[in-house]
Length: 462
Image 1 (cartoon, rainbow, N blue to C red):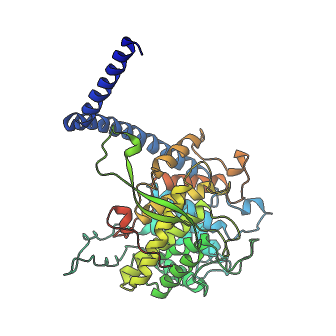
Image 2: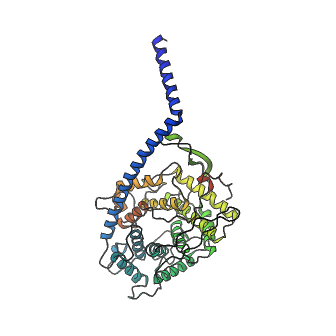
Image 3: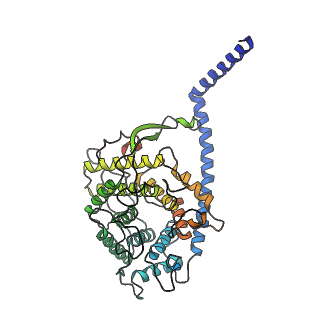
């Protein structure tokens, strides 16, 4: 080796050593972190403005779709004149829920007209509304009505107290808040809650009772189950009673329907020593091992788990855990099983994460999955799913997919397999509910401790 080559090698080694020392200098690292943090915050502000603009355009498009009778295009539009699809009230309730979370007031004329449309068809089109469903009410319809009424009329809640601890330092369950519903809305919610509680199967899940539309065979499905529990939780948090057995049976059902086995998968947390500008590969650290176990739509695991149904399973477990704890009936053994199920479900989502489709091997219901992702983030208390910034990824995808008129196109327009329910109305609602981060988180998050850096994963107690 010539002398020149040796000198060059020594110079390279010296430079690398100097760079390493500069990297290790705490003061320089802190300065660099402040610069990177300022850049990130400025970029985040700009991104937030993009999101807010997309929401404003999306709400304007949605409002413009209202029909003379106060309704929004549903599935009956594809039927013969005067025919009715029982899911149409659910579609209109979904629109009301979206408008409410977008800041449209209950006194708005568009909202009042849509409420009257829903009342008319809920009462069987008899011209008078008597708070008695017409026998065509379904779980989705009842659940979306509760969520819409809650979003519109909940009003200003009494200020929630800071979480209290008992003499031993344990968190005390929050007290139910009496929400300021109008009396007619409260009575309607109570009736819908009674209907949903009565529709729960012996196995603990929900399906389509008296279903007049075509669907796959099955006693329960995770989607109906999730929606029923979302509605029951909203009502229960406002003091409307839901039996403790409802939550226990639903929790047992969701645990039983989760995959029995899964591949080993790491649980990641942000490393508290990482600073902006550091090597991105060092941002997360592995804190535990889990089994990546997801959920399928129907019982029996005849198909592969999907992203939307794994989100549904996670939301179900989180809701049941929080409600049982709030009622003081969360048994320690069940809590361990729920935490194990939550960890393994989050591991599945982390391993299969994506926003371009509904993971895994499921091109349909992508926007339903994205809204499910938002609910999971809120209910389980997650900023990251594994190493993925789920909100930034999903919002970025939705911003790029928004149409010039402000809406989001029906799924079939993309050329992928699509269901009739994936209309431009439902797609736009799900997109806006995601962007608004519309899901109300628990009063006291009950995230498994390992996901917050508070302890090891629970022993496998399935």
